[in-house]
Length: 192
Image (cartoon, rainbow, N blue to C red; front, side, top):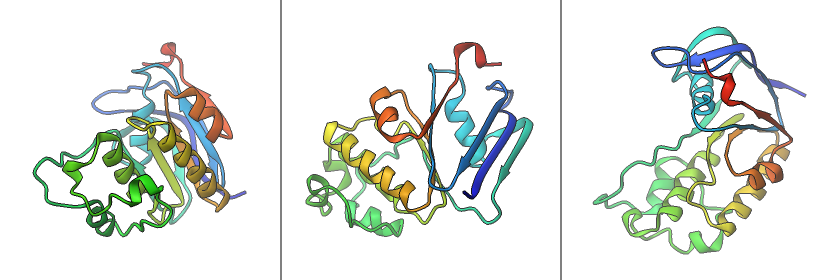
């Protein structure tokens, strides 16, 4: 298997360290879960891998030429934006092919007229359709109902079977159990 990412003793943060040292390897076709209580630095680890947060110590190696896709918990404000779901997907070069019918049928509706869960899934879908070798997902099941979680789970497993690596941060134990090949749990004592 191709190693996409290797972290050894990774300590990351913003103005100061926010994590304890973490060892992590992700290979092509593998879905790795990162769980633990709020405040232990799960999102910060994703940000460091994506180059958005500072690496204070340790080593972080990405495969040469690796393409990253990052989904954060930040949802862009859409109130008053006259853009439809179809236009959002076009802006990100994502295809609607594979969207569940309950969302595909609503692509021509303005984003500010969709439910929070529908908007969340569309923005998530835009990231999932990116030509990325490694996807970094931060609480992707937030605001999703059971149908959305089931569709997401199937799509992520398919993405892994097609060779992508995934690092998924989530508090949703059932989702993590269904989608992840391996889980790393950060504990409350793991924060600097």
